[in-house]
Length: 213
Ligand SMILES: [Zn+2]
Image 1 (tube, helix red, strand yellow):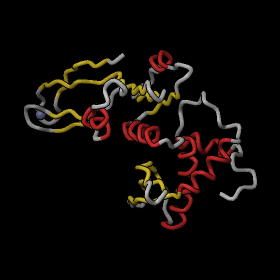
Image 2 (cartoon, rainbow, N blue to C red):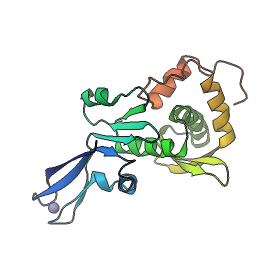
Image 3 (spheres, rainbow, N blue to C red):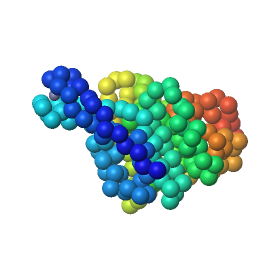
């Protein structure tokens, strides 16, 4: 199932050519060694052999975990045709548009955190960030689970140029999970789970019930 292709790259710094191995299909169950290269972005980094310049290269890439039935597709163009090929019914399929989102989804799946609930949690984090900093939250990324303190870590990026790390208790996560699980938004077919999805769920009334969230 694995597929990788060697492509030529022209270095923007020295204009010379080199090669980059694009990992188009990654079977992480078969090739677990690639995990660290994804997380540290090495598979998306071209290092020029002539001048040493490092360039981030984003390309279409499918990550498949056959053991846990997860599939994450990083799509950098408007061509979604190869997502259709991999939408196996018993898999949780996610489609993302950036390397950051790709890495975040992998971390969420690995940690057993529901990414839909995670996006809903970010709405609350955004609200308190905006109240506290009087600034708009531009992006929030899940950065890991702290088992010892029973909470989740997030990086927040605000339009006040403030980047910070924050935590959310697992209890808050579980409360939102409970509301979500009983809601009609709990539907396995949705593949694009992001801030926009969460805002639509909010608009369509996901929290319009009495809860103690
Ligand atoms: Zn170069």
